[in-house]
Length: 295
Image (tube, rainbow, N blue to C red; front, side, top):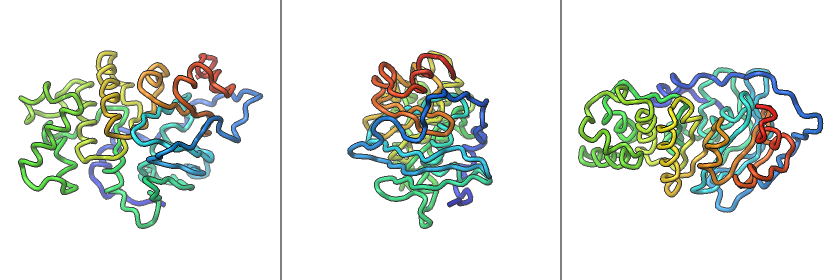
């Protein structure tokens, strides 16, 4: 189920996002049962549906039998201790794990009912449909304009310079960056502040009109002010996109998401409405994590 990278965009993205580490061992609560996810995994109007997903790095299994739906136009947060598998699972949703040697994914991942791991699936258009924003802002060593225009150019989305200009402006506006950069579009994207660089990466992602946006700890390298801007942006984008976000910040998950999925040791332990997960979790491990007993 593995394809080589065909898209330079995906190749450059990986530079800033290394293979997930296994993390430190986490003690299992003696009464914990990980054999079945607590909560309702199915949703109406699912945009993506994952069933029996397992992930292996060589002989080591990192994800165990995960079943989960993501609804259209919802924000779902994936939380859990370091090394619990949340980022590995997120990477399954646009086949970024294909780029990791000895990584094998089994099970099914459906986007609008189509299996993205089907042999006929081309990962280049898939990664336009399911875009990704990484932990560390990774603008290309190009101008602000060319960063945003890169995807539409390689996917043939603009038929003229006027079309391209419109895509760039609209994407920067949706990313909340246009007013800050409109007079310096020819300057390097790497010259922006960290928060601006991350919003530029979001603009680059949405410029190819994705259906789903994956965010892997997009605020972990940002200060509180920049983080607040990204969270406001997520709230604005949810009307147009389906968003899955991995975060170490439970406060951030509570602020931005409709539903929350708690991962532990590669298992999806519990999933439910965010308010319910944080105020009345049903699994002992979820409760222990939310209350700070470990993690």
